Image (tube, rainbow, N blue to C red; front, side, top):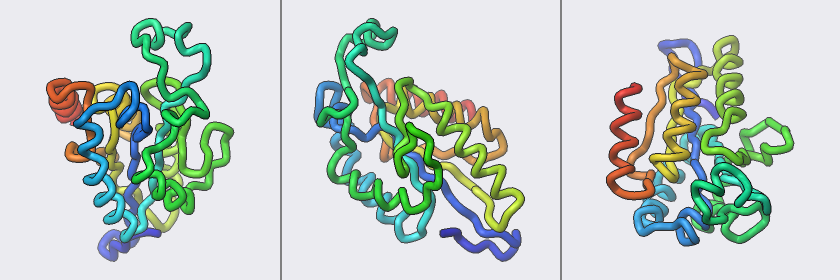
Amino acid sequence: IYIENKERGKNLMKIIVVVDMQNDFVTGCLGSSEAQAIVPVMVERLKEYDSSENLVFFTKDTHYDNYMDTQEGKNLPVPHCIEGTPGWSIVKDISSYVDYGSRFCTYSAADVIKSRVLKNTFGSTQLAEIIEDIVADGSEDTYTVDEVIFMGVCTDICVISNVMLIKAHCPELLVTVDASCCAGVTPESHKNALAAMKMCQ
């Protein structure tokens, strides 16, 4: 599943992280026209990554019946991504790639189902730890993770939170955000998040 790099004597592997491409964030209660517009673009990107056989993770924002009692619920009183509801599911056009990703995911923790990483916070510390482990393992093996590529929603909340976690856990790893496959709460906050991430390299 790796891309050969004879000069370095190792194979290069990219990790793609698709953040929260769930119905509630695309067409549901917190959806937007911007989020809907990135779906076909993301499908094309995933086709490209499929052909080069990279490692793919899909995060799923996951809340429960007590959502309104949580800090997030008090600040954003819109129940969303409640586990088991239609809004919690990954959008149909993207979901076909989840099983593709699962071919490469060997983690079996309760909240990592195949290639799906469940999270009830903006950023997933577990995802960061998993990627850190993959990077560390590869440094002693026959492959090197040379880049982590992020796409998804919302640029200004969950995408930026996960990007900064990965950067903190793997400071020497190239972290890229595919802006054409991201959407924010508003176009302005999307741009501001991209600018903030750029400043953090």
